Image (tube, rainbow, N blue to C red):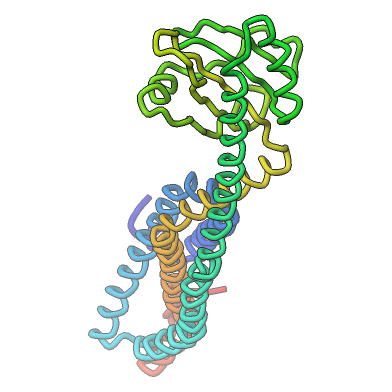
Length: 340
């Protein structure tokens, strides 16, 4: 393909159509990505590549047309001045509304994303999380006192009555499981609301060591497999003789499903909010970058269309001027190109 054909191809409607499709595809991808944060992350590089390819192509076409127009203007080619005026007029008409839309869109992105992180929302989430933790802490302290009272009751109980006594204490204190065990892990007696639970859920060695060294009860919120959230209390049973091996009482108290769900939802909402807080500036910069790229594509497209339209409008006038000069010079054999 020779240079003349390449020039005709570059100055025709094909580049305009192809670049319009490219621009529309970029806008569609951006619209789809902004509706889903995960999709935005996956399409981010693709959006950048598409927009950069469009920018490079448009810049190449515009640079070629500018050099061509500059050469025609210096040579005082017919219609070159009118082409410059029309092109400037089209560019100004396109830039005014696009710049206005960009300005308000930029402000909308800034204010819109910042509104997601309102100080009152953050304070409310902090208060909700603190209230949830305080409620569970109050409940845990209450259950710890109950467990200490039960350990005092077990102090004077004989070995034969321990299973029956544990059952009574478990029922009276609404516990799910009570286990009396030695410091080495040997189970003395156990009572569970689930008769099928043969082996109790004992604490690990670090918990037993902590209770033995500090002498204070251990309290924690533990999620048990397929059982939900439980308050685990481990306390040392008072001993009448220092020669007797230490015994420990573990109590498991169920947390109601509603409280577990509410506490979990508050914790999840707070965690998600903190993650969004960390992503606020990168998210804002990404949206501004994509908006700027689309704006730049639109502006360059408008400049290219200005070249294309001005050349189409001026071509008949230029051909008419060439024919008029030929007739004035007595050249009646001059054949003028036909343009549709």
